[in-house]
Amino acid sequence: KQEELIRRLSGRRRCSQCGENYHVESHPPRKSASECDRCGGKLLQREDDREEVVRKRLDVYQAETHPLIDYYERQGELKRVRGDGGVEEIFSNLCKAIQ
Image (tube, rainbow, N blue to C red; front, side, top):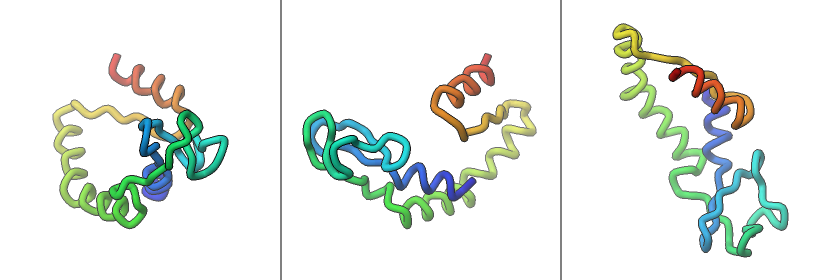
């Protein structure tokens, strides 16, 4: 689960010129790994998407945010949705959970 999050976050890239988003695995650029398909701009990885930074963010989440899950579960307000699968499948699962 944590490795999947790291893979997803650290694989994100963004065009420095037009802002188009890519992912090295799930939505790579067609032309070149470092060039935007739309405008030819350079693809960059955000500083906070580097693997070591993502790992630190997840450590902070576990220590400071994760405890809120128990709180909202006790309140009966927590809904769980699987985050793996395709974009359409995940979106569908989210819609079902909030209806």
